[in-house]
Image (cartoon, rainbow, N blue to C red; front, side, top):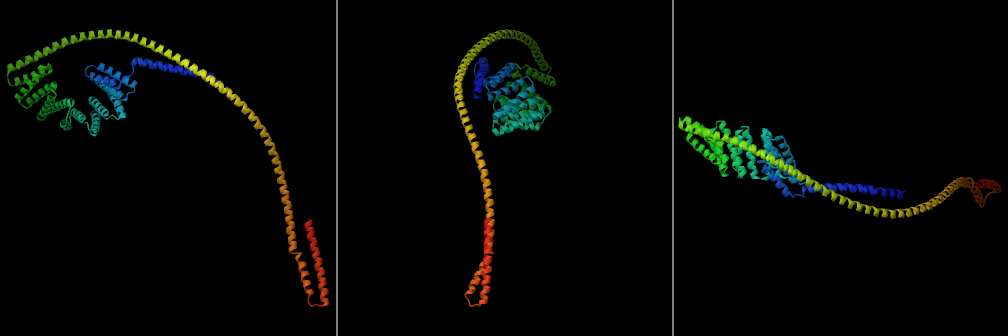
Length: 510
């Protein structure tokens, strides 16, 4: 039976082995095609460099940034690089933020937060908190924004990251500025200014002070607005942020006008105008000329007012003409770029098709060779196993015959043992019967002995005692008559003794 089952297993085994070989062949082919498409393993630093480039392109070319972020994300997923995946997810959130797709941006940022928490990456968690807060700020969910900013702040304090503290305080201040909570905004602005900063935090500090000054201007709190716009100018000057300087000088001039300090206002407007002319900021020039025109009208300086009006109109016309020409140039450029992109796309598609065909052919040839080698190997292995199994089956058959012979021998011994057991059982029964008979005989004899002992102790003792007593009297001085009487009594006692002896004999003979 065992040999038959082994033969059936031997017949089925090659089918299973060929099935395994086919599965392995498919895995090899897929891995070869993926290796060809990804051109080998890309290092962690390379993936992070792609992430960095994608983040840099967000502010200039969102489509390119999106493509690079997708590339980094897919490669990191394929190579199971957890750190690179977390960074790519965060960059995807920033790309969607650039597209103003804030709900999608939140989804990606929460994904990155979960990944950074799994990696126990404190800096990544802080950045995720700040990113989520920034999106909520855009969506005007100020309470949610503040909640995540404060979570970031607690983690920053525990981690002692001063640079992150500055940015965090500035972000909190901006939320309070947007919600018109002046005291809270002022508190966090002062915190940010009292800490060391890098360029990015200095730039943001200047911007936050500018926003807060505008808020105070709208609330007609001009003195406090002047304090904060001067701080904005100070921080913008530290990093030579000319755009912020121009805006700040313009706002400071408007504040000076509001407090009737016209001459100081002219000086600030001229500073803004100088920067605007130097760097081509037409909107600054327009606002400056508009304010200078109002000052000249209020001072009844008609010639100056007319001069400022001419400058304003000239810039306005230039901006209009320039915008028209720029629009035409942009249309032409876009047309040429689209044409070039289509041509490049067709060319790239052809190259990709030919490259894919070559890659598929190479992969198919390598897979076929691998399949052939695997098939040969498994056939040799199957033949070797078959020979080994045949030898094993023959040995098992010999052992099976020996086992059968031993089985018959044991069966004979078992039959003999059964006969002996029956004889022993019968003998035991006879012994039990004999033992019962002996017990009964012993019981009868015991009864006789008990009866004999009773008769010996009572009936036999009495006549013997009488005889012995009468014999003792013969030695004394007695009369003849008494002797006759005693002899008579002896005869009676002897007769009684004889009767008792006969009774005892009868008891023993029973």
